Length: 265
Image 1 (cartoon, rainbow, N blue to C red):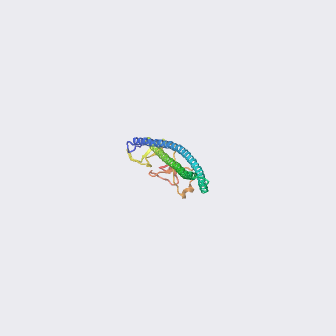
Image 2 (cartoon, rainbow, N blue to C red; image 1 turned 90 degrees about the horizontal axis):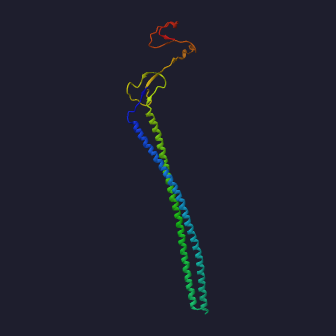
Image 3 (cartoon, helix red, strand yellow; image 1 turned 45 degrees about the vertical axis):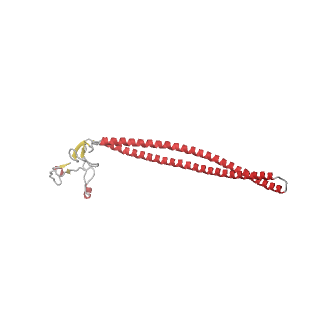
């Protein structure tokens, strides 16, 4: 019947270029999502390895702390023994049962044991501080890598959302391309164009505008009539009727419709 064209002669080319750009955008989003997924796996593996290493260091630190506690107990026992020995040697010296040299050696041993006890206490404090530091380091490693994994998951969700948006836009663009590619209007049935509604030649139309009136080719004839309610009792199915069209010259004979001129049975 007719062919529709866009008022932009390069519309198909522009749509194809837009489609190519959308396909590239969608592929880029898919590639980014795949890369982020691989990064997530690497981060999860690194977190597990980091936590295992931190747990191992913490276990070693706990063992050093336990050894330092045992060293303190031994040093304290030696210090108490040395102090008792000094007291005993002092009493023996006053009784003349030991020498000054023996007392001095006992006092020297007491000083050594006290110094060893204080050194053991310092070693324990250092071991406990190292254990606390390693515990904090383990928490930091776990929290940092967990935050990185969460960021990667958010980035993956963003990439997947962009992929979905690009796919939706691509589907809509394919519909536009399909419509632009099939702009010939064909008759839905055999018939005759009775009237062109949009004007002859080229004309601008928009969606929903009627273009023409088509009368179908058929051997069956039908008439649609509107009858008032007062005349309804005079009509029955199967009765013959005669139709008078406005504009036709007609001579009517009351009571003798078969000889009327300008009516049709």
